[in-house]
Amino acid sequence: MVSARLMHVLERSKWFVPSQSGFRRRRNTIDNLLKLETAIREAFVRKKHLVSIFFDIEKAYDRTWRYGILKDLSDIGLKGNLPLFINNFLQTRIFQIRIGNILSDNFNQQEGVPQGSVLSVLLFIIKINGIVSKLPAYVNSTLFVDDIQIHCAGDDMGFIQRQLQTAINNMTDWSSKYGFIFSPQKTVCMHFCRRRGLHPDPDFQLNGSPIPIVQETKFLGIIFDTKLTFRSHIKHLKTKCIRTLNIMKVLSSTSWGADKVSLMRIYRSLVRSKLDYGVPVYGSAAKSTLKMLDSVHHQGLRIATGAFRTTPIPSLHVISGEPSLELRRHRLSLSYFYKIKSDESHPQHYKIINPIFGSLFSVRLSFTPTFGFRIGEILRYFGIEDFPVVSNVEDPRPWKETQLDFIDDFLHFFKPSTSDIVFQQHFYDHRQHYSDYVPIYTDGSKSDNHVGSAAVFPDFTIAETLHPFCSVYTSELYAIYLGLLKISTLNF
Image 1 (spheres, rainbow, N blue to C red):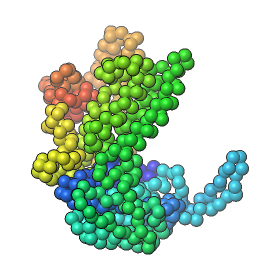
Image 2: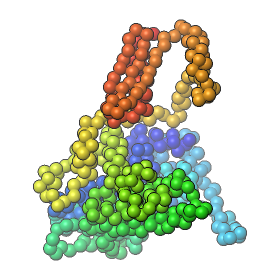
Image 3: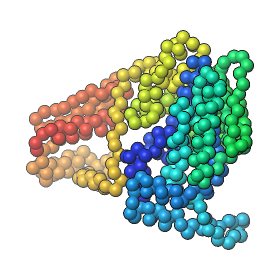
Image 4: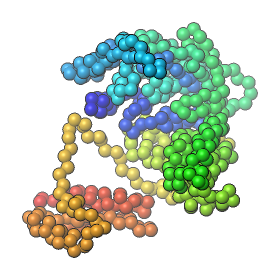
């Protein structure tokens, strides 16, 4: 309860830096991954260098300064009982270590936030929020809780090095002031570039130690390489999925194994979920690279359905009810696109809706376009460029209870075993009991090429045609919306 209310106040006041995506409503890791991937693609097509530094904080939760959290709450303007509650939450925390059946003595946790609590993550991101607040103008950042990344693009490597070294120094000064320590061994640097010829890698210092230059690194679950081919990530993903498929092989024994329904659930939970993660980002890889995952998908479906190896792939998709990975990637990319499109406050909204450097990408065809252009091709392929999306509404205040009073006299009837006459008689009795009220009937329907909604009043009817891609659930909701909208304009 406290976490939900505090988060609402922070979001409403726009207190978080835009680059922070950790544990925030309508934000996830894909936002940060796509921001970095877009910046790299744009640097490639402009034939520029992009240097990125991935930071690692040692014992981030355990080193969080408690007084600093309370000071930040005070600076936000939160006084009274809330800081007292949080101070009491942070104090007198004890822990034990268990090895087998043996427990150690109790130890007091002097600093840091207790891990495992719903409130701990929010308190941590409140404290870490300022770490990227004093970056140079040409340096961009992404922040997902304690996963910090900064990058800078340019023609001159000396300019990039000066900008990023200034950013590193500012972040180091901030972290020293508030008790955080960067790990020089785990903090790495990557130089993304497709320019030919010799060009030196940058040299950065972190607390007097050089930051190692690597050819690939894992960031928020996705392996980035210097050419952004995602080949290493897809190979790693294939290896992980094959290990899980070995478990499914054991469970699919013909004598005692699981049935098709159970195996399909296991496949979707353990294998397909891995393939789905990061699709808007690694989906930009070459088709030949993405094709490596098709064998994993088909093998999993054959194990789950018991199909022969000679079963044609289209038949396999029909039997299992699973589309191809290409269609699956299109669907996930569209879902992410419409989520961003419906949220104008999202920091990547205009970058995706109105992508830049289109003329360069149209001329330099060897360069993979950014997500905004890739999703445009998918929209044109399915013919849904003009698909309208309703903007997100503001979340209600969590401390205000929303009571919906409704009367449904039909809930206690079991529809399959209740005759239509019983429903009709009960409806007539309901109408007689509320004869002083104006009846309004709403309904939505969907056919092959038509979706419609209607609200029927005693003297008139309101009907509208919806986009053919809308679901019957959307049509039902929109019919209720039409009725409520008309009620608000009438004097009942």
